[in-house]
Amino acid sequence: MPLVAANWKMNPNDAGDALDLVRGVLSVARGHADRVEVAIFPPFPWLLSISEVLAESGVKLGAQDCFWETSGAYTGEVSPAMLKGWCDWVIIGHSERRIVLGETDEMVAKKTVAALGCDMGVIMCVGDRIEQYEAGSSDQVVEAQVTAGLANCSADDSARLVIAYEPVWAIGTGKSADPEHAYRTMRLIRRVVGDLIGAGAAKKVRVLYGGSVNSSNVESFVELPLCDGVLVGGASLDAAEFAHIVKVTAEVYGHR
Ligand code: PEP
Image (cartoon, rainbow, N blue to C red):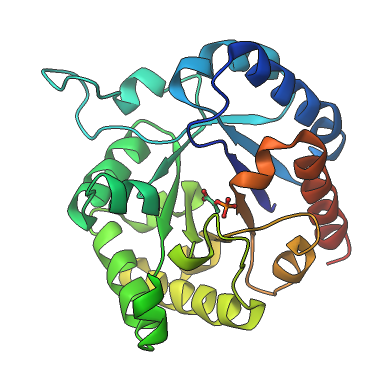
């Protein structure tokens, strides 16, 4: 089933606005729950109240990050063990964390295996920067990130593993990647997963595109043969816009 994930990033600031947004999304998303998996990733403080709104709806909840240890002296961190049981998903290695907070491939690998070990699904983000894209080294960058990020994973993890190709130059810029480029990179990701953890895993792992996806361009990505859905940032903060993205995805996959 395709996955449409809403990364709210550090928004909204108001608890009431967060509840309004999730209710707006839910009113449309629940009608497509049999054809599209929808997951919402709000900031940590809103997770609990949003989990109550989403209960029994079929729409999934996720965290935007987690730490790799279970508990201990790690001020400010949240462990996967704390999220386990009520968060279905966690995003790991988003480019904003890699670039703004200095998260390394090694940290991504440790977080990924820790979250999978707590029975959560992981969306591991990978992506090239503009200078790498312009230098023609996108493939090497993405291959290195996938290889390092999956260092501690096995084929058993593949059903709960999602890899999102998010070119840094497309995130929040309004300039999405050319679908042909996204397709080739998603094909590369699947090939790398196959080399690392086996052909069966390469088929099971879901691969998403993310980067300035909106209701006008979503179809050009979800219709790509190897695309299992989209990771949406800015457009997920508008309930009507996000609902449209879910609807288009449901229609496209319904015709496959
Ligand atoms: C993201 O934050 O993962 C993202 C893809 O953002 P945007 O859709 O705003 O480019």
